[in-house]
View 1 (cartoon, one colour):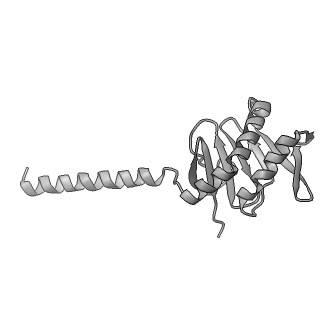
View 2: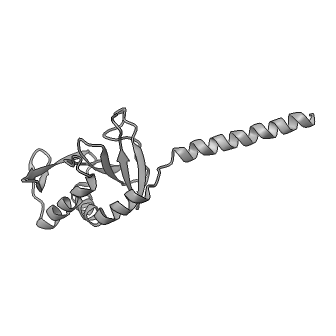
Amino acid sequence: MSKKTLIFSIAILIVTVLITSLVIVSNLPGQDKQETDKFQRYKPGFEKVNRYIIETYGNDSAQNTFYLDKQILQIVGLNDGEKTAVNEEIKASLNSIVPAFDGYDFSFIKVSPERVSYGGEGYRMYVYSRNGKAPSYFYYEGDGMKPEVYKLGDNWYLLKVNYI
């Protein structure tokens, strides 16, 4: 093997390794310090609601979607086809996380075996990953949306979708 062929082979190998590394890194969830810092303000409310949802409904094998019952801009409970009573502490926690959505809709909590999603008809969704893996879809598997995924810490993720 000539010296030129060896150098060319090494150069191709290095470029291949660099491109592969770039592809792997670009597919990892990003981190946005501003979003992470903001989430920390609302994390206690999310954690309290999340514990309640998982302890109460999280062991079902079926998916559950709870719609937020709102009256006069206040969340008064959950609804999964029937009114689901929640105590004042959970209501207060639900209302405390509304500002995390930056004015976008927060109207449901969806529970599945792999995640608990907090969202609505907006551009933002907060997801607690029950299996520790970064979310790969926005509303449901195969919905065609390609969300930007930001790791917020402790199995929490922010998903953003740009509809434009």
